[in-house]
Image 1: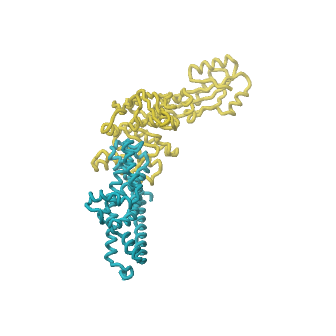
Image 2: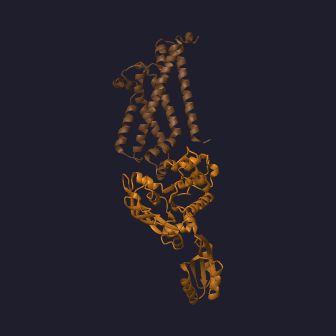
Image 3: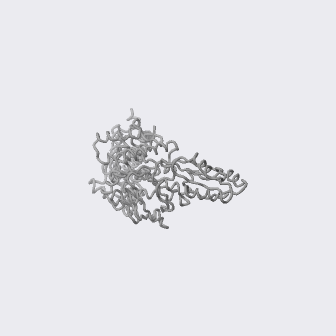
Length: 222
Length: 340
């Protein structure tokens, strides 16, 4: 019945959904790791930071800004040669992971950086006065104190990523966005379009609610 | 000595100008002291205390702690030295994401102390600061005084020999302040911890410190035993500080009445430190001299187990009578003449 109404096989829909999940999932994990590393470097080396280093701060900060300035769809085609080197092909769902990670890493880095900068400098001072080493300051003080805010940042990043994956169809990445475009828009299948959009909206709402709830619990205010 | 500053200067290089936070600092804290550094904000006391655990480094001069020049330590050596110098803060700086127990345990976790040992130590310290019932509570649920108790407990976890207190009571109300001061005294006496504290509240110096240094514009302008400095403040800033806790102005109405009194007279402000002289002071004068006496004002203050008394006195009589009283006051008390 659903198939008749939407005029596509159910398997096409589930495939698109699983492709989106695959792209969001892996690029989120890898992007979060990359973003966290970049954010830590920026926080430590910024002027007044624990290991203030103008050169490193300038370079990393600039790279983050440059990558963030490039629209995802342009980034995707620009770094195709890099994609080819890493995954052996320029097209397909797995190939889409490379630009997605390159795109979301610096984005999350900025969000994580802001979260960590919210941690009161007094906390860092307290950590140092206890004789904490730099890795200890990061692991026991900076990240735990920022984690409620980091979760919100990650939520924002995930939702942004979901939006970016819809463009992955350009390089044959498939996914829900591609489904809406090729089957819905190009074949003028309005019901399919509407359902896809509703699903995406619902997904974003759910993600945001989960993020908000976890973050609130972490603040230990109530 | 346990902490020693020798010719310490600290300059912060700003874009436009150099800010001299600390200048020509020479200060010695002995084992067992509760040493108070008092000054208005911007006097340099915050920079001074941060040089003791090398959160700040002097531009020149040396800071020695327990025989080690801490201002030159780096890396692991510095990390190790800091374990013996704890610090508490005006804003407490507790970890909001961790319970009271976890906060107090943190310095031990950083030291890789075995869990069982951490547990024993933390429970023992929580009892010491009277917060055993709050072990599993998050800091956001605590009052300011309780937060500072956690701060103190956390600072004591590593059995330090020195406790640095950065405005420890400035965010607290007066009653809570007293309970924290009592706790700090208990830490000093029972655990044999030397305390260096900075504050803009001279009253807490009066209550718990045995030594005091007054800072102004980056310099220490006056230092010494609390009794001595409170009884004989020399610099205007010290006098201003002392006056906020030791009342020593003669009320204006009384001064006017004194001025209107007929006959020849002279007024004095007499200071005495030691026992209670409220009753004996005037009786003594009256039994010795024929001049007439009028008390203008008395202020009686607790000071480190002694009593600091400031008395305003008008002596009425002829020149010879007044002179002999003044001579007696000169021998027995510290005094100054007050213009009527």
